[in-house]
Amino acid sequence: MYYAITGQDTADSLAKRLENRPAHLARLQALQAEGRLLLAGPFPAIDSPDPGPSGFSGSLIVAEFADLAAARAWADTDPYLAAGVYASVEVRPFKKVLPA
Image 1 (cartoon, rainbow, N blue to C red):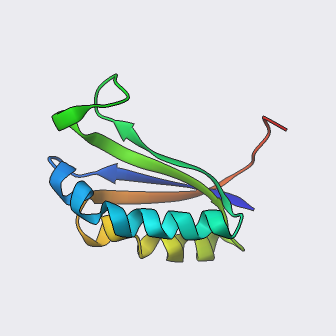
Image 2: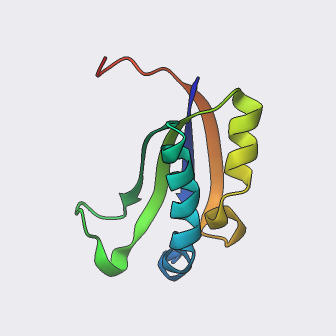
């Protein structure tokens, strides 16, 4: 089943985000290589695909896990959470409907 993982950034976290991005992306690339990643990306803090120094307000990851506990365990070990980029992380089941 798919799970939506939403991280909410702390204030002024852009420097920490950039510093920890390689480790964060490596985990996402591993999910992708396993065929389990549906989508992933950040929420720009302003209405722009490149928010520059405004940074980001959080991230969304939708990926396949065996169950909710496995999704939460994966989310709990995200480098962004460990580095203090994320103030909070929410994990919820996600049902993909479209595109089919």
